[in-house]
Length: 207
Image 1: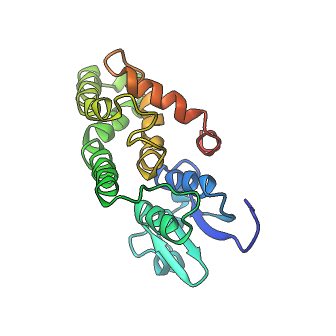
Image 2: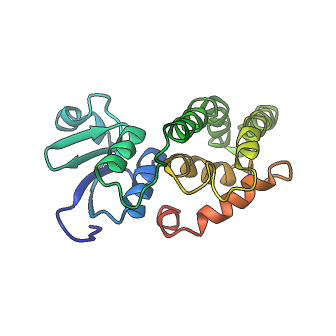
Image 3: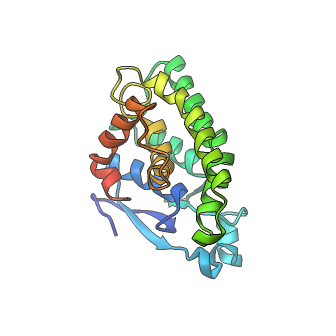
């Protein structure tokens, strides 16, 4: 149990799930008390009737905060930001908020296909891996990541100050580092961002 005083939020969690990790980053940044309820995806806990009552999609995470039950990680993080606004992880200006949501959507949607292609290939036995597929997926990811390289500019984080977009994307970027996509000479700003993120206690807790 992670306590910061008060009644803990319940987080239905699978430890290595990027979706769960992005919620844990926000909970830690806001120093909110939370209790982990393990969901073993390998055993199919997420498809059991009691769990499907919480999340009909049969996925993790789910949070229970008092009488509120929520699923979908980015929706959960938006809820946490609105209900527990300090410290703020979103700017006040509508245009800046919109930009963060656009960057989050880009990172979640457009990176997914080449990321999954690379992940599935690397999960194979080394003798069965198709190097052409691996290199093609890496190249596609690096091309897509140029968007973030441009957006960061001289800012410390993806949209200026640390925000929900950083929390949303760091789990997947950590995996891309493990897959050999990052760091890359063509993405120096993104490399610096990744190192800066890994220094945050909230991120160190999920590594």
